[in-house]
Length: 368
Figure 1 (spheres, helix red, strand yellow):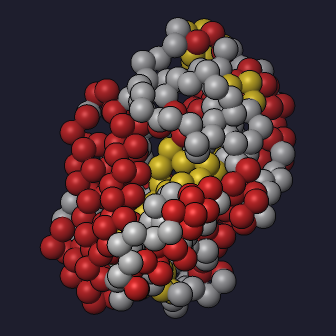
Figure 2: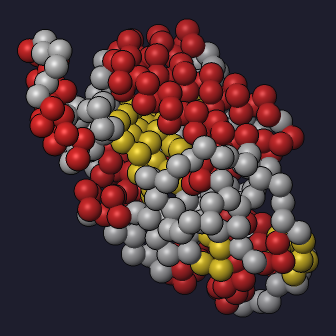
C-alpha cells in the first residue's frame, strides 16, 4: 500500500512509519516540525529513518537513505493548496493523520494553534481525501474527549459532549467532521482515541521524560492532584500494532444501505432496517463507513505506582512536589478496548515494568 502519514517527526508517527516501512509499504511522511517541544528530537527521529537535516527545507521532498520506499516533506496541514497538489500527485491508498497540536495545558495558553492545526488542518485532510478517492482515512482522536467522566471503563458508546479542554474539543470536532464526510461522501474513516502513550522517543513534555529527567538530575518532580490520578499507560509498540491492524481493515458501508443506494429504494422494509440497526457492521447505525475505537492498555495505573516503577528502573528515589489539580486535566482514564480486541484481536501485552525499563534505557542513551 501507499500510505501518507502526517506527523512523522512526532512520537507515534515516527514509530508507525518505521513499522510500515519494515513490512514494505510505501510511506510518505509530512510534518511541520513546529517548536512546541525540542525540534532537535524531531530531527533526530527523522534521521533515525534516513531523512537528512535537509528536511528543514519547506516543501522539498527528501528521500530516505535507509528506506527506499520512504520520503518526507515539511509541510503545514493548513496549506490547502500544497496539500491538494500532494494528494493529486501521489495517489495514496491510505491516509493516517497523526499531525495535531498536542497538549492539554498548552491549549489554555495558545488556543489559536489548536484551531489552525486540529480544525483547519483536519478539514483540509478530509477535503483532500474526498477529492482523491482515498480508500481509508485513519486519524488520531484522544481519550480527552471523555472529559472528567466518573463512568469507568470509558467506552466508545459513552456520550462525549463535555470536554474540559480546547484540545479535547478539537478532537471531538474531528470525530464529527469525519462522520459527516463518511456519511456524505462514503469515505471510510476510523478514529482512534489514544490513551496515555509512552516509550522510547516519547515527547519531552509528557510525564515519563519529565520524571526521568528530574530524578536523574536530583530535582523535584511535580505530582499533580497530590498523586491521586490514574492513567491507562500504554506502551508504544502495543499502540503501533493496533494502528496497523486498523489501517488494514477499513469500515464498510452496511449491506442494507449499499443495496438501497444501488436499487434506488426509498423505503426499505422496516424489518431489514431494524435488523441493520440492531447488529450493524463497523460504522454508524445508518451504515456510514465510520468507526471509532479506544486504543489503550485497558488497565489503569495509579500515578504513584507509575512513579515508583520509574524510580526502580533508574535506581533512585524521586523528590516529590505535591501540587493541586491542573486546569484541563482529568482524574482517571481507563479504556474499554473490547471492540478493538473483538474485531482485530488487539492484545496489548507489554507490562509496565517492561515498558518503563525499555523507555529508561532509551532515555539514558539519548539524553545522558
